[in-house]
Image 1: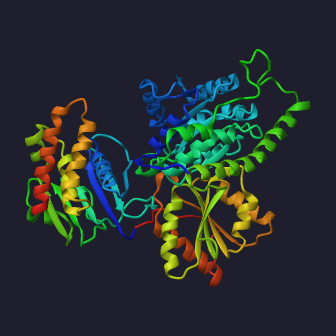
Image 2: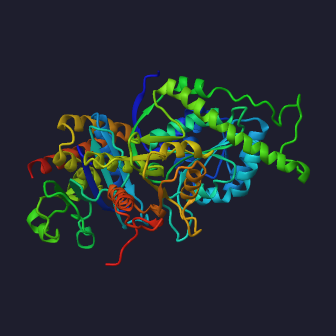
Image 3: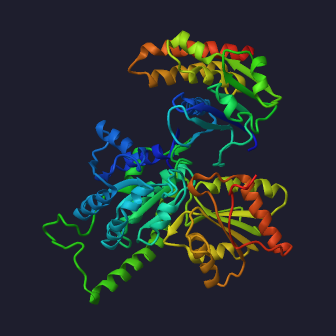
Length: 397
Length: 192
């Protein structure tokens, strides 16, 4: 195991540090708002000669993803960075990157999609892109986003996968917060990520290929099925890479983190920085003898349905937390997929779907305790609560 | 959070309250602590009220919410006292540090009945005297370090010297003034 380097930095700096260590070949990016400090920090590394990445400052995110597709197709290890409306402008190209099986690594700072006009954290950007065929991995803090980024290329570039990957962190809450972190030395990170050696690429005169041609109906559906199989394959690759990362760093990762779930009767299932807040509240409630736990989703695409159902089967009730509104009258995407997964795996426990933290609304340990209290009242006293509700709304005074 | 020092900074955009919070996180980190330093982003513009936060602990910090019951509060701009409830949730066992040339007794009536310690410091005056300009966040940082005792005095000055040497590598002539501002503010806060 490598000796860690004790440091402190923001989530943006942590990702930039990982990019410096990986030294990708090409980074097309829109360099200003709605993007973050990340392209600026990488530009500084380039200007200082610390990396030899080719930076392409494009005029929009649509062009950033287009350039990334061209570059990756040509055979270069390619990454980009964006946030919020920037991801929305990439939309059309996101699907092409995935269907062309290009292992681009995108680092995303999760911020809301307007309106009302707002710049703060929620998951509406990446959750909107959940069905574009990208692998999605989320982080609780700066440490996790650094670790996830280092694992991104070995996952995406694996020959069983060949899919683009989105490494997400919560806007401002982790991207702009300075916290402690354990960095890894450069050499083992570079060895871990390895060289990019694509089997087929455009700039290979010995083996000419076409990328992205028209596909008639007689063949297009098979291409999509192959893409779905690749996403299925990503499951085992994600776990293999996590195991290899554990050997290097001593930090364990899986599809999700189970916190105090061994004997938990009530669970809060969520994604991102709010998981830390939930763990803090769980520790306090545990001291009062309340058997509660947290299930923090790390990998949302591919969706670990069976594993989640297995982890929840001993619980009486679960609160499923979405930091995005789906406007479907039922619940957010995590709520929909977890409840469907529970049903399909015959785990018939109580589920309550909550919407929280939209557009930067704060989420506190008080909210966590209130939700666990409501779950307990539902199960033990039969006190009904709406199965789809908001937490943290302003009240009339 | 148990065993954690929680601090809230109130300032106006452009006065460096966020920078002060990040610098405090930085020096506490070098003293071996676990830290958080983060701003709350509202409508970012010069002069608008802003808030920034610190958590400092011997244990790993997991909570990712704002701070509602701080141990200490710093107010970088005294005009905020009339428009913002700066003592909201503030522990009466803690303290509030306010940038003003007025005395604590003169300021107390504006603090909505706050019962804890009130420390006033003329951060503007100190800054203008030592730096020739109004950079109130540097003296406020020293006052916060003195009042919270987050680290040993000698460690604080040694780390700040190193931090300024790095930050002002291209204009070393301002380091001495900044150190002087820290020392004056630290002494005022220490004896308050």
